[in-house]
Image 1 (cartoon, rainbow, N blue to C red):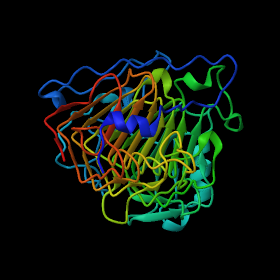
Image 2: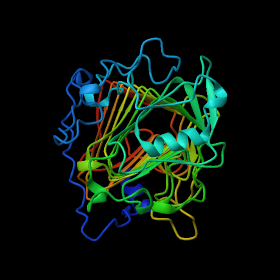
Image 3: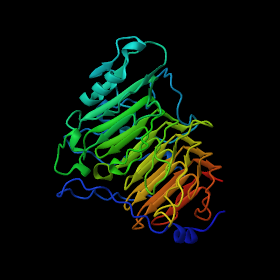
Length: 403
């Protein structure tokens, strides 16, 4: 049954997500500036983001390739008909001169141990596993060491799948995790490490039961630094089935440097029946206080299966919002362009997208995208099928179809 946002607010209450403390002198992440209202042909304008300090050259920087997709790629991901302009810092990183290579030319040489070791060492990482597609069964989660990098780039060349085997999270970065090394006194708001995953498939990640930092992030968990995803696939990932706020069967992000956005470019989450992510909230993506730019991508067949919304209604475990995307916090923005979001569902609200800006400063724009067949079990915002939205104003929609 669809209900208006007013009724939904009464059911939902006010979301109260907060981040765990990092250190007593941590400043709060800088507020994001709301995205400008989309022009009629907003896809042609792109979004350039901010300028990183001189000490870093950003996620793309001088080494960014001219195209987010290498020629002759073996991995088909994203929306091939998407026409959103990809800004320079959102493009794939040039990996023609890798810092280190996993494998010596055979599938057997590409091991979980090698992946874990390479990610910990940082730098630009490629694979040499032979000419055929290969699946690496992860026996442990690969964890970024905060002092290494500052860039950590994992490029599968379109032929590598990292599998959590339904047992574990695949990739982890947390600038506030003392076990990975503290490199500043303000871990929530530092510009490094800068993690990029590209030309990879992440399959069968599962963070169920891992409640550190609130849980979630079945395939990838990120807190701090910078993060982007280019030309990658996420299939059959999982996180806890119930709980308010907890989410992100594929990706969970908490805080980014100066609240710069997470870029998701030419990537697929789910893509077919039985391939989507499943979690209490955010069957694909989930965040608190984080801005997103999702370009030329596909999010389909993902599910938010919790019950009781957020905060959890009396007698319920909570959750069930944001079939594909769950965003909570204060100052943040979401921009979706050239993207298809379809056949996702939420037990509670926002079959496609759940967006709550607690202080009502957040904004969302949807440009030349298609959102369809994303049922919301109990509530959504009137006039925006598949979306529950509380922010500065209603979502800005241009050249898009919502049904």
